[in-house]
Every structure is written in structure tokens, then in C-alpha cells.
Image 1 (cartoon, helix red, strand yellow):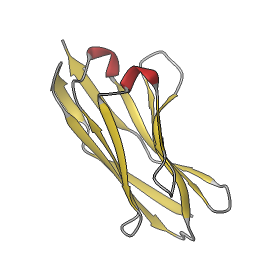
Image 2 (cartoon, helix red, strand yellow; image 1 turned 45 degrees about the vertical axis):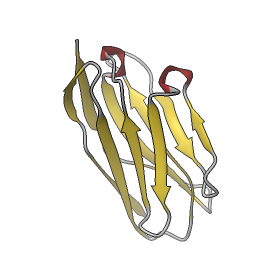
Image 3 (tube, helix red, strand yellow; image 1 turned 90 degrees about the vertical axis):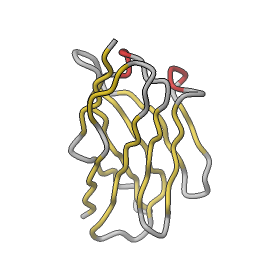
Amino acid sequence: QVQLVESGGGLVQAGGSLRLSCDASGSIFRLNTMGWYRQPPGKQRELVAAITSGGSTNYADSVKGRFTISRDNAKKTVALQMNSLKPEDTAVYYCNVVDAMNRAFWGQGIQVTVSS
């Protein structure tokens, strides 16, 4: 099993920044894609950003140019730098990783609230 622990969420004013981090531990053979999803109030969970083991990234159109995803393979961490935050970025953010056996694991979620 893989355990994911997220940190860095909170309350910020519009235009501000937050940095989310996710630490993976447990029985990890190799982590392939690592990413962040979010679930706004009353809406479905959606992909925010993902990064492959080779460093290729993918972003939701709504966050392109504002958010940056990065990972440290040695430390088994993935981070999401969020700048120019908007009230519509308010959501519970979830860390997600897929290992070499194509198993997906989720963090417990962390709240990000952007006030206008």
C-alpha cells in the first residue's frame, strides 16, 4: 500500500499564492504519474495537473500559466505551486499517484479556500 499525506492548504485572498505538497510512503516500487485533482463544492472531481516520471506535465486549461506542478523522485514528493489564485479555485485538493503496477492511490484531501 501507498500512503499519501498532503499539506499546505488553507485560506488565501484572491491573487495570492499557496503551495501544496504531497509525500508518498509505504510499499512503493516505482511511481509513474503523480498529480493533483480538486473537487469544488457541489461539483465533480477534476484533474488540475499531472506529471510523469519523465517530467512531462499536463494542466487543466483553467490553471495554465498560474499553477506549476513539480516532483522529486528521490523524495517521492509532488508539489503544486498555485499563484494568482481565484475564488473559483476553491476546492478540496487531492493528491493522486499511479504506480508501476498501474494502481492508483489518493490522499485524504486538503481544503483550499480563496476569498474574493
